[in-house]
Image (tube, rainbow, N blue to C red; front, side, top):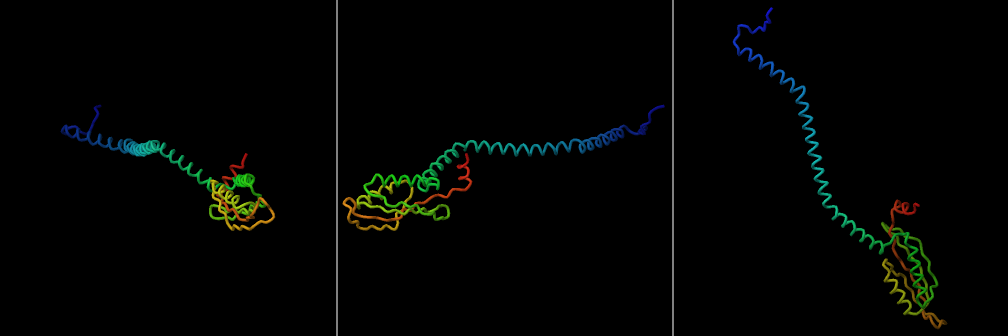
Length: 197
């Protein structure tokens, strides 16, 4: 028995048209089922690749600027170090007490009173008053103030009262004043980190 195609007796181009229709249907079906999802996947990967290449370029640009940023950080750290010498942290207060007492011992006067007061809190710093009394000469007092002015930190002399002193051959005046300095308020986290073992 012969196989019947149903195209017998038809011109040859009917077979060609039928073949093209079947081929087109197979191509469209394969395109929708296989090729289109792959193209969408490839498009997504190409977008991702473009994004990664842009990030790589940004990273390269940042790497080129890294030496400049490090230099700027170094300069800012030096500036911060200078500022902290002018406005030191609270934990450096014993150093000030030791230096002022050392000045008193070097000079030819008697330091009668050296009483650090309570901190007066401000926005980012604290004021620290220190009440002082001394006996000496005008020259001793001026020399003391001149040496204090050479400290790297800010120290203001306030409420200066000078009086005559009788009965002491080497000392002619008594002076009382308040030396006020300023202390940078550290973050609590910074202080706890430094106090940790």
